[in-house]
Length: 268
Image (cartoon, rainbow, N blue to C red):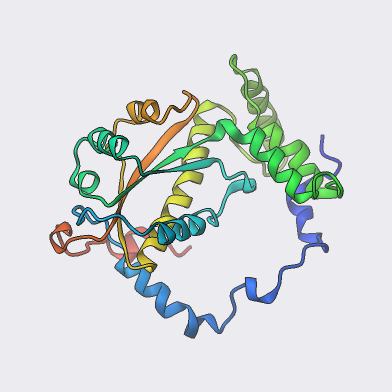
């Protein structure tokens, strides 16, 4: 069990983390950043027809760097991006996107993959960074969280024993206190992984827009065949494919339509 009763609440008492002011938002952003952000959000559309010209590599790499700054549960970054540059693979991938124009005309195709199966190696690499390769061990709430709680939540096995133990533990603790309810089983881990991948994918698409390019996320795809095309293990799960590039005007099939604010936002 963790040394501290609730490492999540104890993290509010940490004093050792220092972040410079230029890494945090402040009220000046309403003038310096907000106008550009609003323009980016309002301009991002799922465009279906591109001009077929690839985005300059330097720009695409910059967008991908932005993507990995997306929020990530426990900072495990349980996803991968596959930027397809090989012409033959790109053509095959477009077919596996069921021939959608957003895939066949895109200048670039990026496959977003959930990799919950890599949680152990990602945790190990993250811990090495946080501890400076073991020179400064994790202690207190942070140590409990990464050394005990994260492995307890993420560990699984072929027979589902760990899943069963988690479900019993969560149920028992919930009788007396607010308790995390998952991930407890294989389906929970799948949802978890796709959420992490989608957060990063959205950040990529916003960055593409801010760089002056357009994109289209595609979920109507042959996921298993794409996984095989990329040589991924069965434990990897393709979340979506993103078409990117310079869109054509006819690639927008309608004006933007959204449900009313009150239908989606509940001010409780």
